[in-house]
Image (spheres, rainbow, N blue to C red):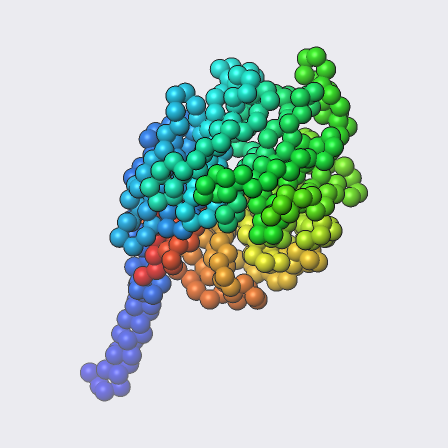
Amino acid sequence: MSGRTLAKALTTTAVILAVVGSITAWMLSYQGYLPGDAMVRTWTAAKDRPTDDTQANDTWVVGDVAVRSRFDAVTGFGLAKGQDGRKLWEYVPPGRTRICGSAEHADASVLLVAYGEEGGEALKPAPRGKGCATVIALDLKDGRELWTAQRKVTTGRFDEGSQFMDAGGDLAVVSHDHRDARMGRTKDDHASLRAVDLRTGKPRWTAAMPASCGTHRVAVGKEQVVAVLECGGKEADEYGYGGTDGAELHVAAFDRATGALNWKNPMDARLPVDLRAMVSITSTDPLVLMVGRDGSLDKGTYLSFGQDGRPRPRIDFDGDHGTIDAADPTQTAIVGERMYALAGWWQKGEHHNLIALDLTTGETVWKEELDEPGAALLARGDRITVLGEWSTQSSAITDLFVFDAGDGEELDERHFRDEVTGSRFYEHQGRLIAAGAGGGLTFTAYERW
């Protein structure tokens, strides 16, 4: 073999090896087996007891504890170094009561939940004065009971899933309800907000609602307690009907220290929002409401308000940026005066844009088209983390991307080695915590490798 022929053969071999090496490296990276490109599973917490009842299922992370709240128990799992998702404690409500509410925004030491009785038939309320009537504070580290308080529930309506209480910093606020089982007003109106010390349960203040108003949602902010109020309407008839006729939703803010009413405005200055609308308090600082007028979140609007109650430009779920799935809380995040969202669009499969919206103007600050569909996003500091699905026809989470919150520049890309099972996601000390949907897996942690 001549020298020229040998050199050509060696060159060809080198090219082939380089191509094979590149393909091998790409496959290892894509499957999460290449250091610097991977996300690996570090631990999985104990599984839930099987259940077909997904009501009152909720998860959140506070400090070094991941919490799962189900209808039958509230459980804390350790996230601190060396705990690796170990079950720390479990609280089971007494007798035949069930968990019906929780406050996820408490500080890192106290957990606030509520329990009560439920009617035995589908449309039958709980016994009068029962319902979701007991609020309990638990020590987050060991599940120890700190205090309990009774909540006024005039007719025993079971408030499972509603925002009738919240906590922030050292303050817990609970609404005392005036509606009957059919959402109508009654003669015996006991509509108020009551604030207590989160750690001790000692009363701080009581705020009476404005005339003809009752609480619909409540949330505790850094400077104000905000509430969605049901105002107007008339007294229900002897059968409990008609009490919501003419009623509409308002927004109000109360002084955090005294409970004094700072301001109250109609939710929408242009068109009344009636009680059939689906409304959620998405953020308190700044105040952002998620509103579906037709009773669902298929279509709707984000309404934002200044500290003085002045309305800001609205942001529709549908827009030039795509469609935001407002019903899925993993699709949006609010940090400061910006909302970050995954906005979907359809073209031979599902696609997503990652967008940043200015809440003060309602305008899009930046938009990045993602190479693959987005399953969820998390916002932390100046970074936006997006979990991606490898194909427009798949729902399996395979990738993790990190973007600069300021301008949308991609900063990191990782691939999961193991299957990601979860419906809610959190970040804790650099790890991704995935929470299951109820029954089966509870929490699973993944870290960069």
